[in-house]
Length: 338
Image 1 (cartoon, rainbow, N blue to C red):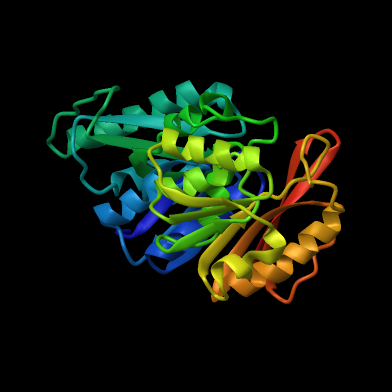
Image 2: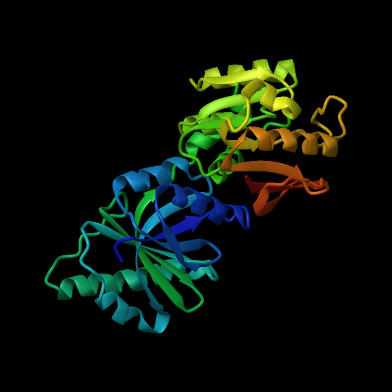
């Protein structure tokens, strides 16, 4: 299965990991979902080269690892399945991920590893096992009585996101967004080039994630302190952008119509956010009128909205993802298309 991949997904959110993955896949090529389980998804694509994989590893925030999918079988047919495994490079290792009964993982790893070793010997080769950094990592995902076999291609590095946590930045406020969620929102805008706007840019978390993947940055905020702080944070990460003090309800006066390729934003809400005396729902809906004017036709708006806010817009709602912020506040990450 040359162009079939198994993606191990984060379990931190019910819908965002697969939505982000499909948004990024859509940038690189066409794709078909073959199967999805609680912790992973299998896709067939028209591409499989190093550039394609680089795009995925560079952008994804809620995917843990990418694997080349080999095939699947029922547990009762495991030995027959292993006998048909394609030849792979050595040294190798065997890893088992058992979701329902993790205590049995080690024993099953030994069992499957032993079978693989015997099959290699019968083929006239000598098994060469290396637990750390092998050329081939054979991985078996077992759920119920089904076994999914693949070889690991890459692990997605999460350290850069940890290095961009709010407390690591020179300017921070309590309302600053987790960089992984900021990246997911940017990815949901389905852009790999062009101008991106955050009309409520705050400390710049969304702009930072957009800048790292190569988008042209524009930010607006009504708070002078936020504008200065956002600029400081962008400079800290060696990013350039146009950030100005302004009102999200009058964006077309600054930029003109149909100017932006994507808009991604997390407007102020909650007790720790400032709307400068404006009613929150009115602020959102008045801003939506201006946002629609400056967004190019066919482009996407990605917006985090408290669940108690009723958004009014002519744009088409494509998807919605609910996220709990704390005990008293939930928000929806909304994706609209103009």
